[in-house]
Image (cartoon, rainbow, N blue to C red; front, side, top):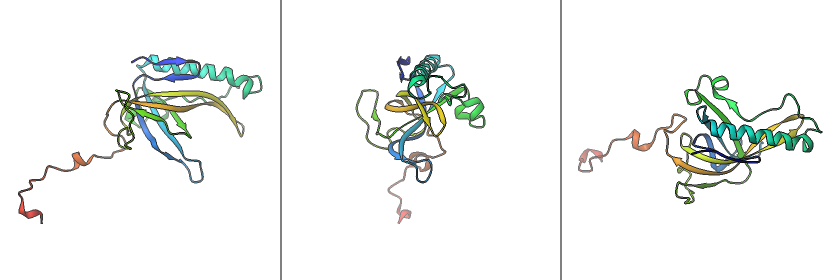
Length: 184
């Protein structure tokens, strides 16, 4: 599953969803505008996706040189592709991986492997493996300059082990023997 890149748009390979807020918008802090968002965990072995994102970041820098950065790309730009080994060193999920946080004010389109639209909030959760369509763009807000990543669409590739320590109802309980009179 190779990544695709066209300008500042990237379709990732198989990545893992974390902090998935893709069916309901969520705000990180009180008073912030709620957004749809997900952190994409990219294995360092997925050089196709990493290279595609790096190329799209370079294209976004070039776009921003004129539109956002007054003709000169700043030396200290905030970049969205981050190293899990250094920034999340205590979290096993981010080991040997990069991650990129993507968000959107609009709800992403979410489909399964057969391109059937998914609408159930439990259909794609943190820990699942997905492909994501993202767009990289320059920003210059209140003196902060950098490249951000917008979320377009998501395709569920396969269910994964849920992140965040939540257990499923199926894991918590045994099957009940309905002939048991002790229940009532």
